Amino acid sequence: MLNELNLELQGKDRTVVDMISSVNAFKRRLHLLCSKLQRKDLANFQNTSELEKQGKDSALLDSARYTEQVNNITSDFEKRFRDFALLEPIATFMCYPFGEDHDIDSLAQNIGAVFHLNPSALEDEMLSLQADIQLKARAHAGQFWNLFRVEKYPNVRKCATSLTSLFGSTYLCESAFSQMKIVKSKYRSQLTDEHLEACLRLAISSYCPDYATLTDSIQCKSSEYGKPT
Image (cartoon, rainbow, N blue to C red; front, side):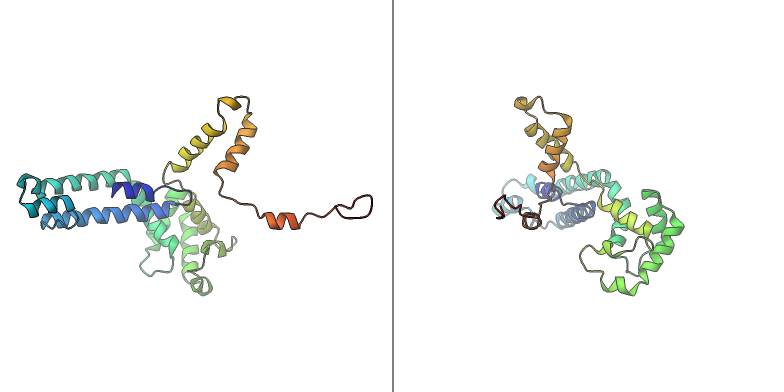
């Protein structure tokens, strides 16, 4: 389960919102495992369940010992990802701001403290946003926050862009260093910093040029005989 979570947290397109969801789901699984162990339900522990059926080594079936281990993992996750607990209500609002259970006052204070914005201005924009019928009708559209007008929702837009640009893990940094080691090898020791930066941008970017449009925009040059080349 830890290996699966580790893979979920990796990747270029994984935002901090995705990571909060993955970590919260994993913590819920841990709580479920604890409750099952306390009931001596070994459905999620195939090896231990098999031993119980065979009647072997009753010491291995001590559910209290396993419950303690799972609780230790849960406590460790609470400590490691305590910053996520601060961002979770912000992410929840940014994903769907039209819920009636949002505490606008505390949310504005929280957002202002995290992203250094004016809480009073945020409150006005958040209340206007929740009453915006046109935006509510398009809440499930892709790139929802790009629909916001900068002049009407400047602080909320800044909060959304800041949230999506947060680094939830060191994956991108480690990936960039790996690419740099490949690009600037011992055979390319004379590579300048400028060229190295350009090579790294190409290596780690997911952008793909529209070659068809680029070629269509290029005009043919006429030769000296009047025929296009």
